[in-house]
Image (cartoon, rainbow, N blue to C red):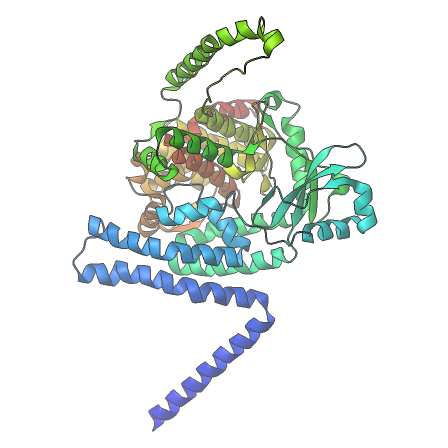
Length: 532
């Protein structure tokens, strides 16, 4: 009887709890979004854990076996479309998170990686056709002010991202073409709720990432003030464009008088996004070979990775030979065009499509971000391929400054020392700098675990560091061996930049040591500070 009354009270309490949550969800969007996430994500997570801890062990299947991989791939193919649908339905931080993890090839299984990569360039706009215009009109002071500001406004967005959309427009005052970035109404509130939900999920599933998420959370909220982003852009523009880097990169200039909390107006840089341009090029290569893009990508992934710069002279020679062959092939047309062609009409010249110089692009991105970090102390922390343009004049356009952090001089000195130690293979010294000078702390301060984690986060992810494990398994190994207790906040963004650079390289089978690429600038900076 007592047991029955207890069960009755529990059932009544559960019913009331569910009813209360439902009522709260109907009034609070954050609660509703969190419930949507948990109701769909938790069963998927539980199925993966069931496979890992129950089904495979009961069948005597080794986790490293081909049968285990087959079963996991079945789950990946089953759940990837559902997770993609959930991310696109909720948008907010879930789309941003997909963009971040897709920067590396070794974090996600192929089925999940495919849709996450699409989020870098194919995010559908959540705006109605004229909604962006209304947001800008309100920011400028009304429809008349909008008409006085813009000669032309293109309602079709140039692109959409996790928190807003970008439109092309022409200024009335000088006829310049500009890009206008418009924030989605209410998106900041959604992000705050989403990050809290993701942190709670990580506490359950991936506790080793929680401390880094705290700094990511703090840094993300700088994205929700376009005046701050415009000022950051102006600082980076002023730091880079008067220097030698202006010959190789371009940073748009913001029009600060037209920027507001939800609207950012900037110089429009011509060009195609790096990821879109490379994908278009790969499609043409696949078509010439008579295979699909997926088949070409699979063949490239099967190739062993090569160090950045290896065979660069062979690549340069091959390009020179192709261009020389084109010149020879066009000599006859040249002679015709300047003789009979003057009267009969010119013949078009034929030029082979030259592949984008990936090694040079990646090296340039690494070098310019080293300059930002050491020389300027103002680091752009979101240099993924969707934020880089291939400009017609051969420069790279660097276009997004929502994730910018000012790093204090004393940190930059210590970080430069860390980079030099990692580049030189002085592992014990790298650990000493990180722990004694920077405050990094694990439970046992195991020197082997520490140097491997430092090398993976700030230098390279070669097998000698990761023991052949992918990134997720490596972090799980490190957490099991010696859990991380404190990561200095200033370490997070530089580490994120190095991992983005390596992720871009990994996508094209290029291995790089960021510490070695940054060493020269780190040494020059330390000398200038009197530290060497």
